[in-house]
Picture (tube, rainbow, N blue to C red):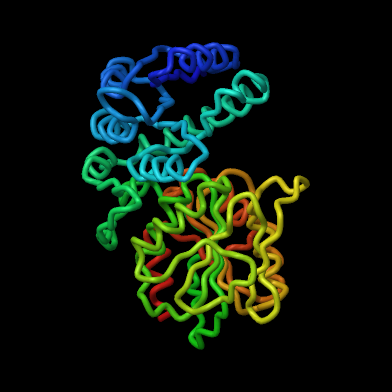
Length: 378
């Protein structure tokens, strides 16, 4: 079945090159283009594409406004293009909060230099976003929620506090929830509450998922938290600042030598690996080209298993691939507890599915319950 694509970008060169690359990919076809956000909204309603690629900086209506209006009028999975800068990171995070599924760097030099590699990456990402769209389409209430979701103001301005217990776009009480394995129905929060660490790994869909989970935690959350989100190096600082402004707990990008502290969440820096050493110290290592993900959930989980043995609560959220599965296996072998997000609320049911299929999940939870369950640890 052919996946149809609408390209929204004010650059004639970029629209033309994207069209050429996409039309060369089996199973993909461009059915229209638009040179500004307002035209993009109109064509989304008229053409009803399977996927929309969206630029941010455009005349008449910017990309974030266009995403919000499309999600309100014609919910469609959207792939954002963004620059690999701090401002690009902030804009991308706003776009994800507004309803975009995923993002790719917009690099004109790469388009000219590595067309084949970029074409393959683009095809993979469009197909992934299209699959996420099928899940999105099955969930009522998306349009009204996204239309009311406030997009965060620029970093210089104070961010308003989020409304607690508000479900994210890809959650719905009406969405079909698959029967979880027996283990997931048995509460695993220990009465003695002796966890020394909460470790959360995620990828595609993770920024919104982490915001949902962490904003539910009280300021005096009694355990340290480490966060591993697949994200470029230039994005993690902006993401940590965003979470810190929204959450009651403290959130910061981890640096080498950081000490784990209760009520503080440390986000692994993009492009590097984060390990936990004896005494709860953070070790930041350069990204190794032999490891696909930088940061890698398996790397951090494995180091946590080595240091804290049976005192870790590990959580694997939405994401493509299987990163986190082997780390979860090591944690389970040492007696730690593992939770996984369920299929119905995952943007991409890859990472949590790998954990569930390997029978490593003590509990399989809808996203909207994860933060509440963590808050119970207090």
